[in-house]
Image (cartoon, rainbow, N blue to C red; front, top):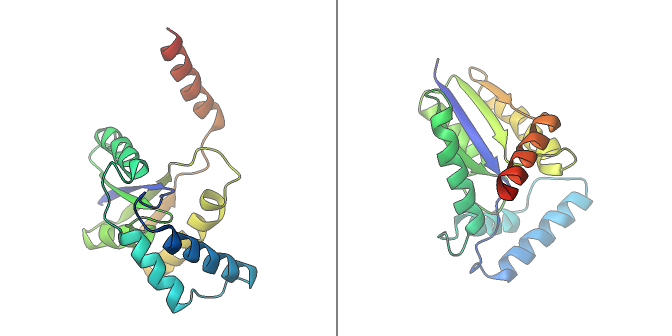
Length: 168
């Protein structure tokens, strides 16, 4: 059994990515969602690919740099499991791309953990579970597990420990 963990972050557009691209992409996504969520248009797919593929640096995408630092801190705690990073929007790789990479590398068990901590968000509660349902159908021989929702008491303890550290 080969275990891979995928840390999924929200994602953010690179600071130097033209705003017109992001604005048009979000407008197309909104129109599609308002129309019942049909398949993305060719224009929407093209814009999403451009935004996700925009060259990234810590300076133009501090969110990505931060998620990668979190991944680097998490990796040694995973008992030898490989760790991949994925993004829900604006940035590559997507969750589907990260799962494909895990499968290509021989994963038989993939655990997906979002960086979103609290319930109520569309990414963690709707989009990621929907993507995992599609990916389970595409990869029936791989166990795909979603490590969410989080124990809010444990999240509160994390916050309290941070506050105590900063005060102390």
